[in-house]
Image (cartoon, rainbow, N blue to C red; front, side):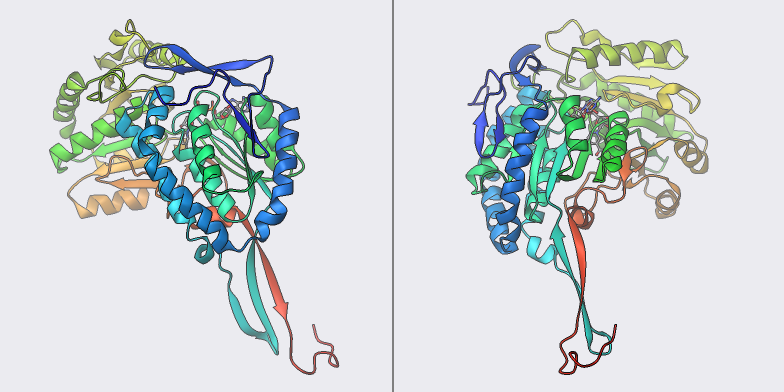
Length: 494
Ligand code: NAD
């Protein structure tokens, strides 16, 4: 168990850690054991108003601090994250169920955003042009928006919140974080470390809850921007409500990602990439491979290899056994939901090759890796997100047909091609309709220095998280035209 444990998950408002008593709580589980480890208070507008008041007050001095001084605190934060890597990984693994190696990857991706944000002085520079008109110079500056808020999902307890608050704060904003009520303990640790790094009180506030607090954030008149990551149905709700209330919004949603294998693909590295993409984090990744598209003759041998590798995969409690390759899903609801999907897909005519339901009798919320063959684009399983370790095989006759099928998907997070042919890779890159494309890469993962570019129903908004778009999202531009020639007092111009 991690060193700190709480009966009620603490909230941070105006620099004070509070154990807030509410009528309603959500249990936090260790999903590998099915045991309750803490409870999340379902905060409401009373707590929200206090957090907004604190963030508004802190904004005055934080936003006027030179960007280099803000960056110094981010440099300190970077060191503390590094020193506490093992501890944070244990917290993630305990409350989310992913393996320690996956938990470290979760932190690493967030850590890279902090490193990116350390360069805020360079990143937020404006532009200037002398003599845009006679004797008139033009300059742009980027200013923070005010109070920003972040709402995050359960599957990446460190990475997703860190797509949001480090960059927003580096840009001079103050922030209210509302993490997933299912995995709030990682957020507590991340926020405590930022405090320790020297962040002034009120700059970052942490409050917990569900729909009430999310709707409160989306409608509060003093909040300027909302970053959301989660399911598309909630993402669409957040996008609509917050933009109707005049806020800037970026909302990442659900996904259905494909792994397309050509006959000329390098077999061993392709198999490793498929296994880690589809069954890493028990398939609970917005970039998880969910459709395995074996083009033409390669399909049969691919099925045999993946099925054999599934049989060897070590599934279990990642804390108890360090060799564990796949942990449980997040909770009993997820376990039941995925199990029903498997039943339905089989009834609808797909062939069940490996059945993960055999693990259901174990302690904890386990579903083993599951493989279906003979799936086609008319089946529901082709287009619906499962968010569990279930992989479906399709068999188009050629690359053109494969791309036609995949472009029918409503989501648009990611798709990968495995091939040794430059021509196939080029055709795929040009024709596939999604925002993150892999070429011989199982998970075209979000990287801090680039935007995470979901398309279609995988993203609502204009400016994505991370990279240059992240800086644009958390700042607004002022364009300044100035005239200082000797005669400006006498001559009236425009
Ligand atoms: P979720 O939508 O259930 O919850 C996300 C957040 O919204 C949580 O903080 C939750 O408290 C809040 N919420 C839940 N229901 C709400 C409601 N009715 N009204 C207002 N707020 C509500 O998502 P989840 O189950 O935590 O996460 C899994 C989903 O997240 C998957 O669909 C996955 O694809 C997606 N995801 C997307 C990305 C991306 O970048 N596109 C990254 C990670 C996860």
